[in-house]
Image (cartoon, rainbow, N blue to C red; front, side, top):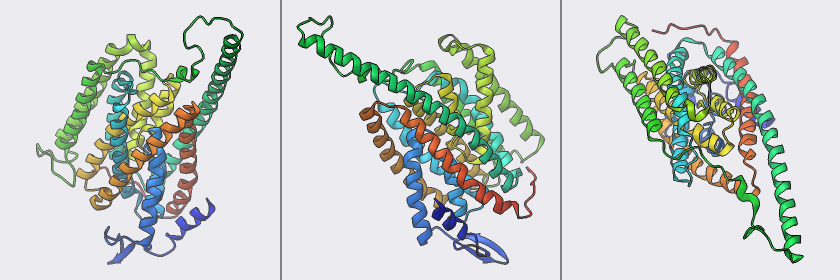
Length: 414
């Protein structure tokens, strides 16, 4: 780890960096082709990060952002849009694999309730990303990860202890059945000596609740339509609305009201099945809103906030990873579009790492699923989740202190 940190910080020693060139006194990042040796090594690290992160449903933005900044020389404002495109590639594969499992693990009801405020948060986060200086963005990201680490570690060990008790109980029952069968005692149930690991199978609340899925699709289409209507520096509004004009802010207010209305509508549809009070639902949706802000502003996939929330609610780890991946798909795709419209996304680098993430997601999810099936410990997902956030929190402060030495101030939103 120390060698990696030294290597990362060494890339910042030169005035413009190894992967940058100076034009009129300004450092500009090189074109994607031909790739530098450092970039090839960085692509391998992106693959390794996405391999594990996508298996847990969090995307891995907490590690991708410092990697893109420290090793590949991108400013934080450009690294965050790139991380969103990387996360999007992995999330697409993760959701497809989740939908192919029998039974489907995604909890569509919870997703339909949390999604509107998450998407609203991503929109706010993209705006704040333009206004906040790099050092504040990275310090906020580090603070968020420290809290998430605590939640993940405590949940992981709690699940591990529960799994150990179940495994011990299952082994005792198998031994008891074995003694009874060899002692000539007739067993009451056929096949009672079968592997009790079947008791650990995750069963979803409902496979395909079409009403919840309809809300999810409508909410997602609404945020895409909102992004196209408001436009950005990279693409004009389809209704020719000027940035920061009166119609612009009216549109933003309408979209905020829409998200809150859809949240209340979703609550009315699923509250009875989830047994949540209105106050508890408001609490969860507020957390989701801040998770969305973290997604758009800090480059997180949204899952780093949502996954601990789903685990606290009581969703099993495998269902948490699947449901979180669906949420990450929405947040990463909507923010990627907004960053693209805002002319903040390097399309060439984004396309290459998008493909790397898709391949990594496929291999990572397959490998972790086999581990869980073999050892009957879904807590593996939570331990990996905690490990990724710990590494993220270690990497981020290095660059935070680096940029704090620069005269980086707040910027205007418009």
